[in-house]
Image 1 (cartoon, helix red, strand yellow):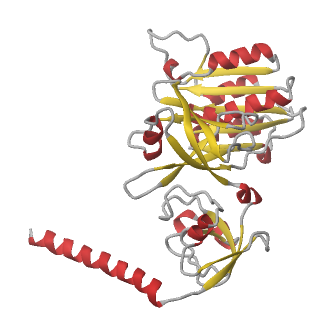
Image 2: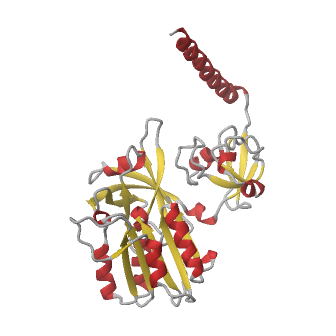
Image 3: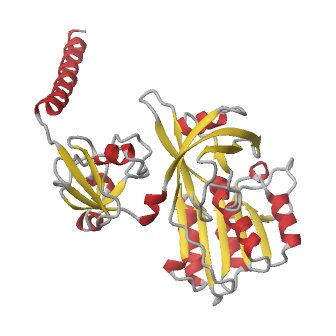
Length: 363
């Protein structure tokens, strides 16, 4: 018992010392006003020194992706620091490759502003906004996935590219955190945002979203993401997903056929069992309307006697390999678990797709 008390006292002293150091830095060390030069003067900021770069950017409505609330545990808030960021910290190295360190990438939540600093962020980041919205409706599409629609309030409209995502603010015991979810609604729906959210056991974001009711307020930032749809209608589009990887696929497909009714597009979607299948009837109806749209679902687990399934069986990369001919100009968008992404990428490479023509999100 005495050892437990000693450990508790020691841990308490360490916490108190850390808090004291933090307070002393804020009170005794005055860094004054520092300039944050963003993209060579495109968005200059004058901020109070001593805060983290991420905090300064958020205060000035520049929303860099961050899922952990600035605790240095997600690795999302990467920006290029050109000057004034100090040395790379041990808390950053687990999330940065050697190549990234050499190129100046840093975690914005770990960089303290102690002097003027020059940074570079992707141009898209300058257009990211914080949205207030309310739940317009929810629908269970499988036993563990909900379709959730947000009606936008401020701003009342969103402009996004097919396949991009938003970060929804969710409450947690340690304060608000953000979780990323792909937009499933097409780009022509400007006043609403639709998500497909799988319930993850003990997941902060998914538990919060699955318990929302119609009319509940929601805050999120976006859009984010590097998916860029090829504008040449002669280039075929390949969409491959699994589970909640459906969301960006649905966005891409409906956005595509609103612009190019005759463009060739292939959807390959992998599910574990028949109870995980969703949106199949909607896509089959779309395929009847647009014969250039080809839909293939495959189940990876053996089909039980109680289930009826006349589609394909096996992992989804096998369906991709079976139905796609080689040597056709294509662009591919993949979203799903890493093993699926890696298997499909190999198949697409064998079909002649270049790495720059394959976009993917792993989860």
